[in-house]
Image (cartoon, rainbow, N blue to C red):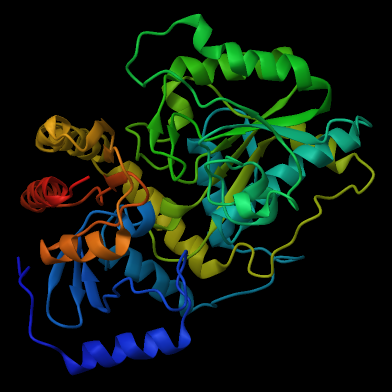
Length: 437
């Protein structure tokens, strides 16, 4: 692994300079001092930088590249489809990639999800889910049910309705609170994934749904793992109780599986840990294996039928690139590759290796907790890291890890080789050890 600092590279430096002149990166200032690293190519679990350095990828490119980079079968799926047609509008037309992908999703997601609405990003999938919930109650002439109940420490995306159900205090979107629709929030689940269940863990959620159910259209949550809001892993019993209370108080349940879906938590979908089915489910990220932007919102026949019997008679949404054939083709192949592979064994090995090799961080004075679930490893610090400073330390160590706030975490591709996984974990521990309060 080439992890040493290399001499200045004019092409590398020129590209970085041009990037800073024209591009605004996510969650960054235009004059940000944070370093940039041009990628020349990527294969398997390795990123090859333009200056010759090679990094082991610990992020799966924001959790999406589960099969690794430059996968020959995913490449072939795109090539074969582009030779047919790259895109057609989805209004009044259909095509095999979309039909086959929708069929796969219905067959493999929790029972009861029967209709698939495609969109082009996870945030938009959440917007569609919220629209479904609102239109469902409008169609039943219960217009008072127009709010959502969400969990603190939750994250659901960057568009406006999605922002409204993210944590309004500790989330990334508090600057917009004055213009976002007010929603209802329950405390973050206070029970760890493996923690012995006690019924009082659901008390705050129960109180919120009892108090507000007459105005609640739906509950929205990330099942089992709260991702960008804090990497919080919670008990499957909590999710089971939420499903029961939604049924008791006549609220729809929206499961945001954008980050948790497609095996990342050790189950194909995180809802399976609790044996529950939501009324509406959002998927994205790993849906295409990280090749193209695509998301989907699934719902039950009950929800779909009610909406189409309402005043509008249709779901009021229609993205231009809905069900893009290229994206659907590579997504179908990615889904097939996943279920045909030994993914459970691979994720179990990720979990076992990360638990063993990240454990030394737990004894460090500046570390609050180390936790692992499925293919997710988290080192939570006591104080936030300064990204501009720590990012280069990871690159110097030959690994690609991008922490946020107090969280240093990894979600490696499922196909990462064991030697690379060991190197990734050991170098992460080394860098964390060098971070001081």
